[in-house]
Image (cartoon, rainbow, N blue to C red):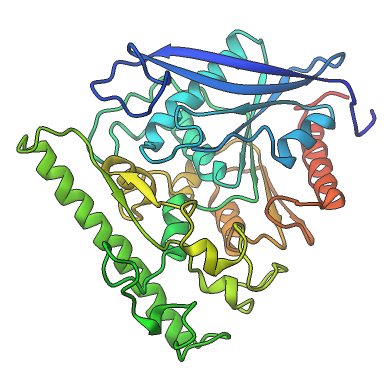
Length: 391
């Protein structure tokens, strides 16, 4: 079979299911009248049926415009890019509720479309989400969110195989590594400790960073995350007292992109571009409104950003995953820290697992058709070898 199938059908997918809620989380039609309304895009070759579907899902992004799923579809695979209820707005995002959305797509794929095999495909931030989903579908353990709200995940249907591609261990893990510890006043981000500000020329600590400085820096990062978490929990307790009459509240967290790895390529070395990150120039990205965890509700902070509270950490969920696993590491990834793929791979409970490294590939395979093609061929070979894809 040829590597490229030119005639693909692009199909808009709409899924709706009932979910009672006492609180409106997002603007628009996503959660009206006790229903959750989801949107996705399915790619499938016009004249090439398949019993196997690859599902890509990110907690907050839509993936149909990105190179990876489109290249998979161009190679003849059936692909679903599934959007959560929080698509393009992670401010109120509850990871446990995204699992319900994921489960709705899996059920639709089996019962409506008739796919026999579902491949859970976790790319980038979808990796830890997918691991959380597959772990709970295989071995249910979560009955409430980190904020203590009840959640019923008993109806999740597990995938038949799992792909981890250019993915990080969790949103909480990367925030702990990315957040700027120099901020002294959360209400005024111009007040900073210059010795903890990677972008301040007055900082006497410059790359390559000394091990002692890195230990101090990492400890200060974790301390800042925990201070934010303490504020969140205190506010949530106050709201639950009924004193204010509120159900939820949002917080703003400044300067959340300051990982020393981006300025010092000797830290967890790979082939990434120095002084660069997945959002561009690190200093500018650090104060950008697009920075991770910039806007968050209280419950969302606990569910996705608090390292001590989130239930979506891939290392915690990996041992419960037993289906065949393919892990793909991009050697020049400028978003995912180099150790993450290997750590997840080692922790996964799958007896059948394979690790592939794509040399020179960055996070998005931006203008890298050869590297992207290598990744696609690796996936196809792996699926074929396990009878998950028929030629």
